[in-house]
Length: 469
Image 1 (cartoon, rainbow, N blue to C red):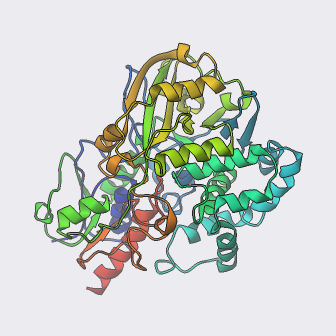
Image 2 (tube, rainbow, N blue to C red):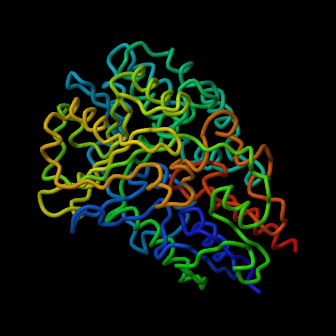
């Protein structure tokens, strides 16, 4: 009998399996698709030689993840590559605010009235970032805080809505950029703890940047899988699990799946019926004949570019997708330019480009024209550079990754109490009604992103049970 079986080979499932295997437990991992990866994959979606990331592309939480940093992933081929700037937020007049590695450079891009306020905002946390990241990405019941004072201070700053934090600032430049950071988790700007969301992304950029993985996001998953196999674990692909009886006998079962899928497989009935799924995305991967012709020079050298003319425009787009059940007329967009940092992703002189806008969960329309009109506002002539597109609405996103229910790439709405307490109101979120069954997906704390910490935290709960048995 195995000690543990893991279902789902996304970053969290792979990390959970690695954490168990490196502690001497016998582990087998089962993945329904032909390759490991989940939300961290790379494929030629458009034309030969253009390597795209169908889901996640830039990895500020990955390079800063306490779980990943504790593993020898570089030995297995993972290499982080950085553009000149982690992120830029251009405006229609050709200017831009930036999120740079340097706090001073970032603050200067907000203008003289807000530069000092920004430095005061991040100053208490950045010197203690590594300890802070470990503390807030772990549950108190899985690891005692190493710096409870800084964690409490961060909580005071982060728990209020982002709209409250933004009152410290005067100009639109900071407010637009920070609103865009909050929108990465598709949370309403006035939601609980949305200040923390924006702060985490900003601090991550200053600490280690927003890199891409050399060769594509698949490199993260492949490194985890290779290390797992070196630890003696078995990895089975093309193996769809429909019920627990499909799996070999084990002392524990760990699911990197949505709560809905786990309830169906394990026969939990309506145990997760109150879990809410959030807005979806409409995503386009482009093969381009040259770089994106941004008007703002800063955007040309940035790995990630946020598209939203103002805090008001971003908020309107978020409300349309999350509350009004319609696609926004001017979508807020997150775009990534992997080939700016990694020229191997496209043929010489060509580029890959990744963009998405928010739409309602399960939406069936076409946002292509609205997205490209937005891009033309900030990069006139963009359409002339397009060689090919790969378009994915909510249905296609869910087909690429079964955890994206209705196209929700956060594996559950990141709003209200569910941002902090997921998938249920519980001090033991990785446990389920069955004592031998656990959940480790992004539906558990600390939530969405390619960081492996949900798998890391769940593995702690599993090995504690195994050692008690």
